[in-house]
Amino acid sequence: MSRRVVRQSKFRHVFGQAAKADQAYEDIRVSKVTWDSSFCAVNPKFLAIIVEAGGGGAFIVLPLAKTGRVDKNYPLVTGHTAPVLDIDWCPHNDNVIASASDDTTIMVWQIPDYTPVRNITEPIITLEGHSKRVGILSWHPTARNVLLSAGGDNVIIIWNVGTGEALLSLDDLHPDVIHSVCWNNNGSLLATTCKDKTLRIIDPRKGQVVAERFAAHEGMRPMRAVFTRQGHIFTTGFTRMSQRELGLWDPNNFEEPVALQEMDTSNGVLLPFYDPDSSIVYLCGKGDSSIRYFEVTEEPPFVHYLNTFSSKEPQRGMGFMPKRGLDVSKCEIARFYKLHERKCEPIVMTVPRKSDLFQDDLYPDTPGPEPALEADEWLSGQDAEPVLISLRDGYVPPKHRELRVTKRNILDERRPAGPGRGPSASDAPLAQRTLESLLEEIKALREQVQAQEQRIRALENMLCELVDGTD
Image (cartoon, rainbow, N blue to C red; front, top):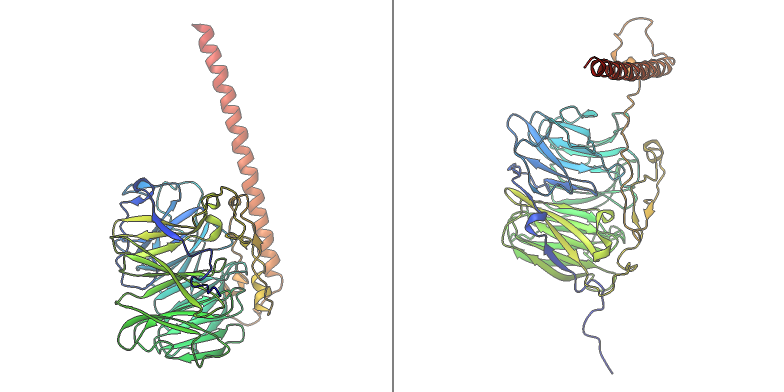
């Protein structure tokens, strides 16, 4: 009777490889703020990194192809009056990014496809609602323009960026500082960790804690939590003896962990990056010089160690590319952007395969850039799975799409209080008519300028002919 000793998995031989020197982004002054966020966000078009900036907070946005040394005068995205603590790209628009800052505000920015000449200083919209620093941002995975923020005031606010309104405010569920927030696959639940050592599963629309577990990790240092494809919660934290450990939990039975593994002794918080397509979780510790990765499965011991990518330099932060930004022709299943003190280095995770054909088993259909719901639909109680796309022919980013912000009842908000000044139903159509007339006027002026340019060009040609004739 033969006994199978080695576990069968197509991801057993995944290996990491740092990009060549000419593929890195050099001479970037990465932020030195002491905050446990990744300091880096990446999508199929752009790389964004929080940087050092005098007199406020800033981050730099580079097209992915702009590798090599970055000019010291390269335009930044500036606008915050205090350090930027977190940035996050919108999953449904590759040109829109949100930033959170120590100045208590969230700003949403439209990044042009061309390289700007000067600093970008005007956000599309500024969201104000927190009373202390805002350190966590997370876009809704399936609903358009829905953004979550969590601040040092222990409050979670969910915004509709399209109108600038706060849809929901969860202000009495956390008695202490929130360390991490994560949406589940369809955005119906949140997993949060808090300084009070409690792991919570929250239904944001009901404003209720569905399940909670005290001391999922017994240490006092920060925990992190992410949802897995199976609906379990993967956590990283510390033991009472300050050893780092990872855990897997079933929200329907928080009494006992599905898996709990001690790792090593280090101070750095482990940031988990989870890929639902392969069910691999990558652990990157701030100050570490390695990336450990594990496969989460349905069979014991449930969390299987795969390998470790090691390098010489410690990491200041890490960016994780969405699946649609990977090179499927090279069997690339993950790509990280590792922040050093003065540069950013891509690290590619690859499954070794001999065939050059598309590997269906490595690349199931993955969430694309189209939202499944509008913000109002999600708020009313609807849920939808992400709209999936195939990567068989590679991913082509859609054309530049502008984020439109429509503030509701903006005239009501500015009207002075007084008798007989009740809200009017005609205000919104009036604002719409004013906007349409302005757009028409701009269009007419543009046509007039074009006509004058043609006339000037014709006159210049006539003048040249006259000069040539006299000669």
